[in-house]
Image 1 (cartoon, chains in turn blue, red):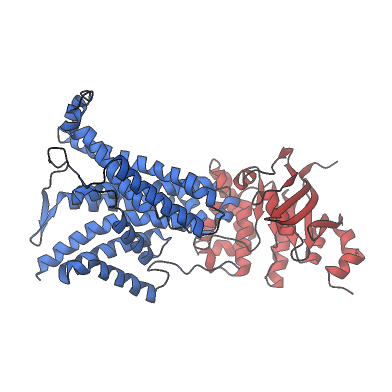
Image 2 (cartoon, chains in turn cyan, orange; image 1 turned 135 degrees about the horizontal axis):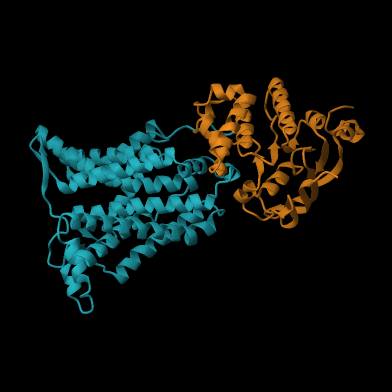
Length: 328
Length: 240
């Protein structure tokens, strides 16, 4: 129980928290606007991991280029595997393609599974979301694999080599951890600025406070909703790729537990509140890691949910959930 | 012959199976203040909601400046200059006064100069709003919220401003002030369609009025005619 152990667990917790925060935003964005829990969000996180792996394999796994008819990939792979600029380009391509593909998947799901039920009783879209979730899991299971896939090249080499970025208080911090923490903080800051400063961001906030009134201001509600269903899943996809890289594998059901945890984070922070989701994500990650380190790894989920219950007992709206003055 | 800005022709609007509007026809001419009065549930708010596109009429047409707007989504109707200040104010509670006003000018993003002028005009009419410009909308009093909702409507640079129950739940002094503002806006050339339960006030400022009863139009006439009408006096002005 040394100081460096505390530091180590905290750094692990911040890393995990960054992932939770990215996923939690997707839940909170959708809930804020539609008052609906998108149960398929955890599967979009999972899809992000798979799309990312696909991009990495095509761009940087020699085994793929060796297959018949895939030889044209060789010069492309030579660039992406050359290190330096090539590596940066590989990362940008992986995250961007995964975010965009999964973002559009989110938009399509909203259009066909949720929009037709917009004026139905609240339970209907919820059931539809569970249906989408089961559909996506089974699609991956049937068409890709039922097994756990390693997040590496066919020869077992990692796409991102694990190295130590720096040491603090005798604890080695890996480049992967730095990568995750910095990227999630940058994305969170960008989203926060977008929502608070831009015209479209303001339209999103207006829609979440009173969609009908926002429509009267001239906001096209359907576009705002589609945008929320793009941004949330895109951020979830980034977390999915990181999750694959960090833990070294993907599986069709990998979204379930992180999904529940991130949803918990969103509720702890105050569902519907973006900064709340970020705060809740980091809090949950840190508390969970410390609990795992100091109490028992087996109790990490128990502790996480005890925190949820405590927060809800004392602040039913979540930490940053505002008690909004109701309209007269 | 004054130009007809808005023409509502025999609209029928339903809430599910319930027929809320049973063939309402209303027209508003350029520069007029027209009021719809009537009891609770007569269909006044439903009429406004149908005009602004929050509800779609089952049959009947609504024409605005020669263009059919019935069946258009709400943001398209707003785009054409029909601005609806809804019942219950419906300001954005966690946005500041200034952000609320900027939301009102959401569609005028190509005209920052005009937006600035409109904002100055709103602060001119409602100095209270300027004092509270960085305060959250939800923390304002009822009267201030009504000023904000009206100001937000003005920010859109409306051709037709539709106000739903602007006096609801407000102190008499504030009601007085809101009605003065409505007349001022009208003198500046904004055509106004006003829904009110406060029939006496509404008919005093209105050029013309319609009396709605259970989804249909029972009476129509100039504000003055309706004010002295026996039936209106009994039913809506509380006189015996």
